[in-house]
Structure formats: structure tokens, C-alpha cells
Image (cartoon, rainbow, N blue to C red; front, side):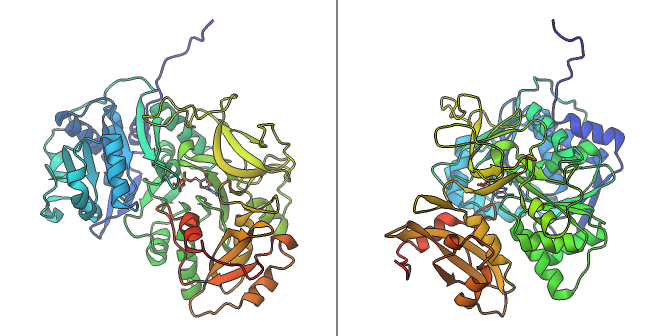
Length: 541
Ligand code: ADP
């Protein structure tokens, strides 16, 4: 027997409808790419998103067609997403920090028909334009006054483009399982892989993000998503903020410490989300100038492990840290570290230990850890194994690789991460499977070592890689960047780490460098680092 409730399809653009009805006046503030602060609200965003939909429809874009965006977090990018989805087309966020060849590869693979771009990325597109034949039109996210001369095919200023339609348009109707968004993983191994979100998965994921014990997105919040919409959907905030009716503050192209601090204060931000490298810039700005935060209540930190020193910095100034873990394949939220009932009594180091973990899985995310024979491992906080996940907002197949089965016999997706899960359900990432250091048959966590090293007052950033050792196979090499004006002494640093990590985990050597390479999503580029130190001979070898 089937239930007798209404069939109300979970379509992602109904989120902006709801925001316009219930929170129409709620502000959407942007540091525009052109410079000035721009203010609009959800009612206007919806109205203009309908114009985007109408303009695309007029240009012949149809259900299932892909529309690329190379854009910062701005109100126009937000309108573009909802407008694209509202006719059943697919927004395709392209990470502009990728190499131009990768961008061309991805646009070709997606067969994008339209590219919407910020002014910033026009030179990149001009350089690859003759290699991306599927693109019929470029919409530049600006107005007539700022529109540059460009040879890009059928280039039009966004404001002119949406002014050319009358706005009398209704969203198209289709099934909730229709594709809504597309995002490629960075492809550090092999070709990039496309993750194709559906309307249903995006709505369910937005609801998940709003839950009190997940990101607790609320109408009472002023939210600054620093994490870009092109990096794993800005961790749902372009969906969950309007869904909840939160004020939205968008940073545009400026993610440096000074600019972020200014927005946090002037827009009375209560919640913000970013990767550790971005928070590091804010921390350095605050430490240098003595600037204080007066409204910020909580921050989500994820994308790579939140260093202990960063956790302590925020918690000690009264800003609660939600350490979050996830991936493009998971829409992206997989876990968030809040304090469960029964653990509220924790304080000091014990609380920080708990908050250092990547947190617990919310409803709609099932987790397991398994050994090499696929047997489930106990949740004892000690045994670690491959972390696998299952749920309605988690990838089933990659785009145009529908013949490849990527789930195990129980329907779980392998995250490529290695983790422990404790009896309270708190998951802790030990490493990425490919970054773990294999020493004498045992595993050493590069993340733990990095975290410990950045706790040293003179260390700005640390990375650990395994390098060849004739006896142990691999041993850890610690690569560090000193803080401005500091010099690092190897012996002093290792002495500092002594006692904080297992003796046999101690790095065999330290290399001081001026810069550690990063990936397009702001993570330490271990692949590049391993290449740099390929010929490195450990003194102990
Ligand atoms: P990319 O690899 O392109 O940066 P993702 O954002 O999808 O794309 O990366 C997901 C991976 O990032 C995870 O599988 C995990 O290895 C790592 N990661 C994400 N959040 C955390 C975290 N809080 N701690 C440790 N690793 C994390």
C-alpha cells in the first residue's frame, strides 16, 4: 500500500521561491568583482533568476543542457544557479584555479553550451576559446559600463542579457531526479570526474545542512560563505541560506584576511565557512593588528584537516568551531563536529580533542570503516580503515562513466580516506589513503604530524610526505614554512614534537621551504611535493 500524501517534487529552485515569499526582504550583500559593495534581497534574486531562465530559454537552452559558470560568490552567480536549474538545465561550476588545459578538458567533457563568467576569468577563456567548440555564447557577469571588448563568441553583458527579456516566465516542470548541478573532482589522479547532483539530492542536502547539529543554518544568521560555489557547492550554503532565510554575505574575489575581516564586522556575520588556508590569512591579520571579532559565533572549517592551533585560536576568542568533512562526491557534507549530549561536560584539552575529530554523520549519511578484506571494523576510536559512505546525496556513478560501478556490494562509495570512528560516532580522518606513510608495514598519519608541527609558534604551514627508506620502505619527511621573520631550527622543532606523537612517527628529517604548493581547492599538493622530493635522501637511510 502506498501513502496518500502529495507528490511535491523536491526541486531546488523552490528554495528561492520560499525565500522570496517568507524572507523577501532578507539581504544578499556582495563585495562585487567591480569593487563596490552591492545589496539586493531574496525577492529580487528570484525575480532576476526568472529572467536568467527566460533568457536561456530564448537562447534555446533545454532540459539537461549544461551551462558553465566560472565565477566568484556573488549575487549574480546565485541568480545564475537558480535560473539555470529553473528550466531543468544544469549549472556546471568550473574551478577557475585549475590549469587552462584542465578547464578546457572539463568544458569539453561537459559539452557546456553557455559559459557565464566573471570579468576576472575572461583572459583564461580567451586563451582556450578555440578549443571549446561546444560553447555557443559567453555571458559576462557584469553590466554595460564594465563590459570589456572581447572576441569571445556572442559575448553579452549579463545585465543587458537579462534586460532583453520581460521577466514574465514560470519555472519549467520536471521530475525531482532531474540533474541540477555538475562539479568535477580535481583529478589529481587521472582525468577529472564529474559529479552530477539532482534537484532531489540538492534539496535533501540543503535540509541536512540546516539541521541544528549540522551547520545549524537559521533565519537569524548572517552567513558569509567564503568557500567558493565552485568548490563543492560552497558546502550547500547557496541552497541552505535561502532555504532558512539567512542573510547572505558574498565575498566576491577578495578572500584575503583584511577583506574577510571587514565583511565579518560590517555585515555582522554570525556564521562563516572556509578551508584552513583562508582562515590562516584571517588569523594572521588579526594577530598582526590586534583586530577583534564582535559578532561571529561559529565557523565551519573543512576541506582539509583543521589544525589544532586554529581550533584553539577560534575557541579561545569565543567562536565555536564546527570541524567538517566531506567531498565533492557527497554534495559535499559528510560529517560535522558538534558536541553530542553526554559530552557537554568536556572542557580544555579534552574538548579540543573531541573537536579535532571530523565529527559525526548527520541523517542521510551512513558510514562504515573497513579493512583490506572489506570486513567492517569496530567503532572503537583506534582501529582505522577505509571510510565508505552511503546516502541520497552521495554519488552513484560519475557523469559519462555510467558503465563504471563505483559502489561496493552493500552500495557504499569508497571515499579514499582512512579513518577511525569512536564509540560516540565521531569519525577522525587519519589520512587520504594515498598520502598515508607506510613505515615497516605500519601506517603513519601525515595529518597528525602536520597538526603537531603547526602548533610550534614559528611554523606557518607544515606538510609531511613519505620518502623512500631502504629499511622501513618509507619514512616521514617534514616540510615547513616559517612564519614571517622567523627561522626554524630542525632540532628545536623535533624536540617540540617529542612526546606529542608516537616515538616511531617522529619525522626523519625537516626541510624548511618558503612555500608549500597548493591544489586548486586550497589543499596541500602532496603529489607535487612528492615530485619535488623524489630524489631526496634521508640522512638515516
Ligand atoms: P578536491 O580533492 O578536489 O579538493 P574535495 O573537496 O571533494 O575535492 O576533497 C575531498 C577530500 O578532502 C576528502 O576526501 C578528504 O580527503 C579531504 N577533506 C575534506 N575535509 C576534511 C577534513 N575536515 N579533514 C581532513 N580531510 C578533509
